[in-house]
Amino acid sequence: MRHMFAKNFQHCWIQSSLIYLGSIIVLVLCNHGLANVVHEDNQRTSACIPCSATYLAADPNYPNILSNISVSTESCESLLSIVKVLKFPNLYRSLEGEGSHRSLILKLQAIESDSSSAYLDGFNCELVSIETLNGVFADPFELQRLVNRRVYLDAAVFGDSNLELPAALSKSFVVEIHMDLVPSSTDKLKMVIDLPLHVRYPPLDSSGYSNVEISQPDLYIRCRKKGIAKDCQWGVSVIEVESTETVNWLIPCGDDAHSTVVSSVTFLSALICALSIVFASIFYHPTI
Image 1 (tube, rainbow, N blue to C red):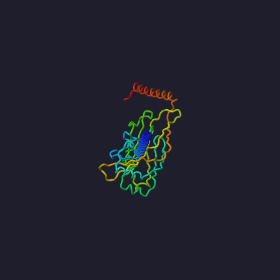
Image 2 (cartoon, rainbow, N blue to C red; image 1 turned 180 degrees about the vertical axis):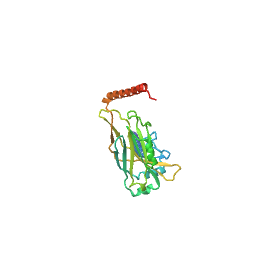
Image 3 (tube, rainbow, N blue to C red; image 1 turned 90 degrees about the horizontal axis):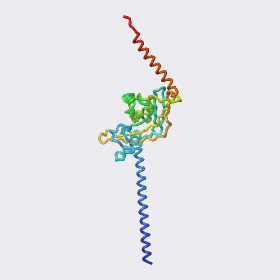
Image 4 (tube, helix red, strand yellow; image 1 turned 60 degrees about the vertical axis):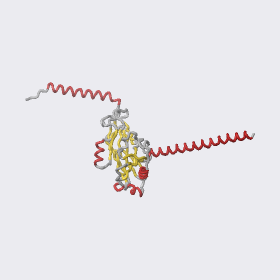
């Protein structure tokens, strides 16, 4: 009897130990998983990249460029703490102008902070705006002229290099613009980006208009210490703003129902002009 009681007690003790050990393992794994989720979320919104990476949109991993960076150093954390000081919660966008050549206006107002200017004094900080466009494009030569006039720090376009392609044949067109964050030259860190846009030839539509939707841009702040040449890094952080309404551009276009008439008239006009030239060259005799 005593032997059976001791044996049952031993079994119960082993089972209790296994349950306790299993609970500890589960808690450790859960905590590790939560830590990874938080870490991945931090990677998704802020990270450090080498200064040689001039354009964010040029990275093949864009727009997931920050989520693929896992190396974090003390200098990187210092940069990210500076970047996170700047907050731009308010975003305003509008399309201004008339006709086929208009301007996309983007305005950002920072949260006023007495420490912002002090932080920025020792750093080179930039606002990076990345617009993804379909049906419209930005002229790279026009953007370069704006850079030369120091309207922007830098600007680049990625996508179809053939600006004459119609909208139906063109792919997404990405525009990346960099602006300097200098408190002495800004109105309380109020940033305004004036992006000139041009229409591609729209597809036919029975309504007579083609609607081009310009979605919200990807916005970043990036900072680096002044005077650092070796192991230079950008601290990059996503600017989280409230979602804004999509900007719509109604572009006049042809009606598919009229394509037969238009094609016939165009063909007849071209034929008459060609025959006129032929007859004129045959029967025209210049007088000497």
